[in-house]
Image (cartoon, rainbow, N blue to C red; front, top):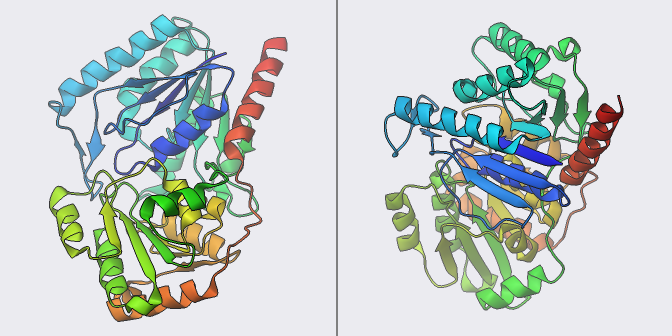
Length: 387
């Protein structure tokens, strides 16, 4: 089976990494991952080919699209043609579209011509599937938004896969018109990579710390937001006396402004390391005794897969991260930070208290969403062909 998987990340990198994990699960198939955000240059398995469209991102206020590759209109025209020609050349059996039509409305310019051509028969008769995370952000005009989504789903798509454990959060909590969806709706479980056996000891050797040292990993996802949190964590750990035996590893994210990264690095001291990014983030969480982070989808799933205690500071511009964190916090050692908790002395106390517990956490949550997605798709496609 040949699969084209479309993912457009505009602010962070969570959408991309979730998409990549799903693509990895289609091990015996030919997968083309079409990405359209800032390049991340991640290694991919041999069965995945990555096609990078000219990058388009979004500013931190979610107010406008931006790009360094030319004017937005010029880039749109080039991207639309490139995506259409890809379908003409590759003729995929399956077109998986991440988030759209529940989000990425601005990218309809390149997606809708594909949908129309598939339905008209001028492109290969690909099955079209929406790949969706657990929680939707709120919209100003909910009625118009949900009507548009329902119309697009029922007109262009053949199935909706929701990458959530329905025992934790269901889509109807943030989308009211589930009963109007006329295509199959499937909950796959959450999507995340798992740490490997030996990751804890390997990372600690790399950092030059022993098993008695308390390792704190602080992160901010892609890094376009989160500076305030990382700044507070570094200041807080600096207040913990040497006897606390704490080592702090900070990951700013690849998209944090250079000036902000330099500021954090200048704050670094003995036993405090500040890096932009690691492709081995799940391994670092496996090695950690505490994670301090934002509460994005991928980070939360990485935390649960690593079974590491955590302090999370949800992004405040929408409900998504807080809703997710509140559900997970009821099931394990995830604690939510409020703005007042970022005061260095208070945060140092919270970090010290959580490190003193010295525990790993088991979450009764389905984290095998990537494999479940591949299994369901393969079975469904076989059924469709027989029909």
